[in-house]
Image (cartoon, rainbow, N blue to C red; front, side):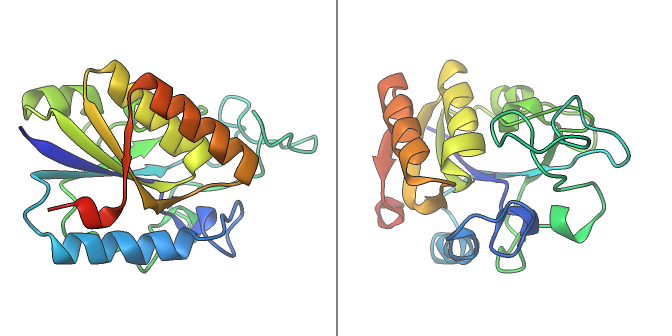
Length: 196
């Protein structure tokens, strides 16, 4: 069994004070860093995703530029490549990250599987190449990118565990719905103290 950790979108724009800040995002950043420090051998590979949107266009309709965002398919400008908002939250220590994944380059992208490394490697190919069978998922936001990444990981045949104390959602209702959807698809939920 080869286990990997997916750290989803723990970025300045998705944490408190950011363009699309989620309450609890900073705590997730610190908690993930603590998890990796306490269990340095728990994960053979660590993947960290970031939205990395193009500047100067609407990224395939993802950015609401001429109308108000509907917060379903259109959003305020966020996580533009090379800006402070697109950087990892400062409380997230990235020394243990094996693969940095950028997604949403010119298009909407919620799942980590829609991104690539800077060298163009896909997540699916990396998981296959390295024999990953089990994935723990943490990050932001539970009801959007964590949800999409979890469902895609399950579709790719992975055994998926969501560490529920290391995710943060946008809204209580959509978070509850998303957790139910992930469970129905086969995800397991656990607290981070279950990591060995």
